[in-house]
Image (cartoon, rainbow, N blue to C red):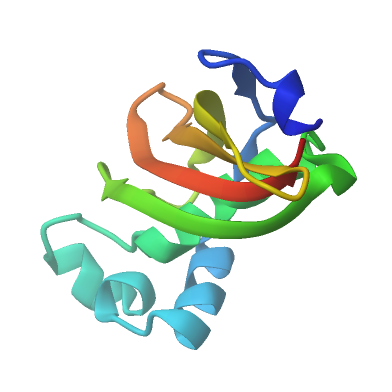
Length: 141
């Protein structure tokens, strides 16, 4: 979709993604090697009572789910910024995540482009919000 096809307040919902313990450990081993993501024994003794996903992994899954529904298509040019990132609740192995995406701003720029900003809100399978953040992209008019 082009910038002018979006309306403020428009809402989209993604499909779901179930996170496994293996997914969490693999991601953390490469990108966020902290005990609460990797060491089951130590994580069981911590405040979360088990291994949890990295917040960065939750952000990446939220973005993946949004992109995969294909709304941007070939009209998106590049991401420009992410703001107000909030990791609200821990994500555990077996959690099924889905993202609700709301258009919150759009601004035309020169050269037939504009900036589209959406609010990504990700929920687990009990409808608890686990992540929230604003994403802005450069997109064709």
